[in-house]
Image (tube, rainbow over all chains, first blue to last red; front, side, top):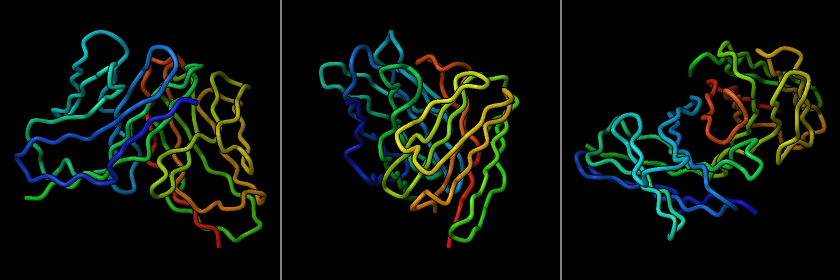
Length: 113
Length: 114
C-alpha cells in the first residue's frame, strides 16, 4: 500500500537557522509529491510539488524540497527560518490511481526568536 | 484559502442528529474532496468527486454521504451512523483529478457532537 511518513512530530529551530522537515514515501511507479502548510484553525496552503525534472524544487515563502529517489525522501528545507514559519507541515503523495492525495501525519515546526 | 468557502466555521450538534457541511468553490475546478483531520492523524480522505453527478468513497466513508449536483458545490452529510464525528473537516478542489494538479483547501469546519 502507498504511504507517506513524516518521522518527526515536532521540529524546533532558532530563527535564522536552516530548517529541514523530513518526509519519506512508499509509492508504486513515479511519485508525485507535495508539501502543504497549515496555520491554526485554517485550511492547508500549497507550498510546492515534485512531478518530474530537477530534484530540487523551489516553492512559496522561500521553501524548497529535495527529491531523492534512492532514499525515497522528499525533505522540505529553508535556508533561514522565520518565526512566522511556525505551523503544521504536511507531506503528501498522489495515490496510484491519481485520484486523490495521501497525507503524512504532519510535523509541527516551531521557530523561536 | 483561495476560492473555496466552507460554512459554518464552527458547528455543534447533539448525538443522533445528521448534519450537513457546506463546501462551495468558484475556481471552476472539476475535482472536489472531503477530508477529516484529527490531531496526530493527518488528513484522511472521506469522499471525492471528479465530475458532476459522480463521487467515490475514500478511506473512511462509513457514516458519511455526499452529493455533487453542481460543479461548484460538494456538501458532506455526517450521519448518526458515524461513531466519532467530532473533528475538523476540510474541503478541497483541484483543476482535475490528475496527479499533477495541486489541491486548494477551504478554511475548514470544526464539528463538535455531544
